[in-house]
View (tube, rainbow, N blue to C red):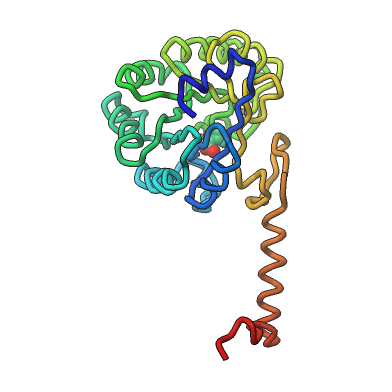
Length: 263
Ligand code: KIV
């Protein structure tokens, strides 16, 4: 997958399937399954590192996760999430950090949360050959501004702002736009207004594609289940059963058997 091919999918009416990954093995399995986009999300802060928000994850940690994933991906487009405070302080820092994902970790694009405040940075990055995926709606790096992970864009003023910012991001040169936890009707309007693909998460069926955190849809991260997550497996439960069985087998000398030993 390449950026131009991904954009072309919208014109062809082909839905984009995207998921997150943070390690090589998951990336390999995902890539082999034919996924279009693999995002190394800053959700790694919560899913991999046990933080309660995405804010604490650092550039170095995101580079580490992105390198892991790079080693497992042959076909999908690899997008790295720019972590909190890696692009807000200055244009120079934002450009350097975005470039590091391509130069040092093998990402093919970066994702940046936000609207008007990041438009100038995005235009500069695109000029320098760094493709950018935008992210509007419930942007988790702004959790303390929002106060909770609630639906965004229900009030008409917020909806109007989101529509305006989607257009601004498109003009700045984004190649796709993640729309997180906004009403399906609003996502549809934005999808019909901009030429680049929208990728929804909790934004209804009218987007040009969908993304989920792989650990959520696999039921590995089962501490909470947002309404927009469909569980395609219950891996955490399977793991708990396997661990219980193993502990029981060890304690009762049922493991290892003769076949599993060197006699
Ligand atoms: O960090 C992340 O995983 C994301 C996706 C859920 C869009 O931003």
